[in-house]
Image (cartoon, rainbow, N blue to C red; front, side, top):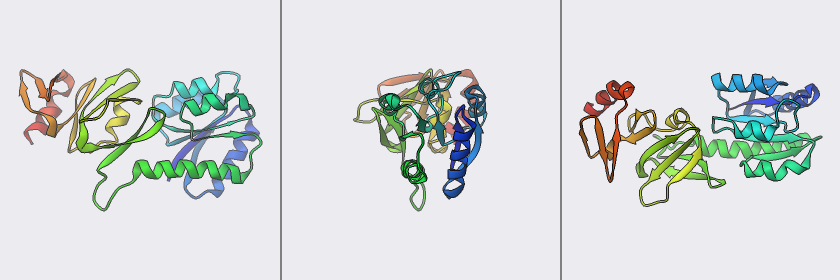
Length: 230
């Protein structure tokens, strides 16, 4: 089930989205917001999978709101202004709905989101062997076994991958850690996550990987040594 919220300064527009979501059986509309600031506060505490987001709002432009999101959240823009379409798709929006939109058009956009959500959460009979991130304007699949290490840079992360180019995606360390199996990956520093199998050595609280050394942060020591010894 996709968890979603809607943000629009027009109460009638929010009511339309609420009614349409009530018909769709794979989306739960958790809340609606007419004030983007309140929505941002909510998202910091309760991340969701999908945003229905207006663009031309008095307090903040929806494009800027989307750029400032810390979570890797799917977005469907809902707006009366077609001139923002290119900006929306440059932000990897799932779809761009021009008001007034029909239920069929809305459902089509939601089906696109559901396809991507299914890819992101897909598992085989035991456990998924890969995960997805948005990078280079597309959804990229990464095998867990190919990850060398992950580095955090403010609201972005760099994923170093064996025999492939490094990927950069807009995401927090907390968000990407949630995509990784806890038995195989561990956060060792506020800026680094490493796969346990890639560790070649350990000396003076410094981890040696293939061609890279990473320090163990003080607040991560206890958890690391428990996992490493295990």
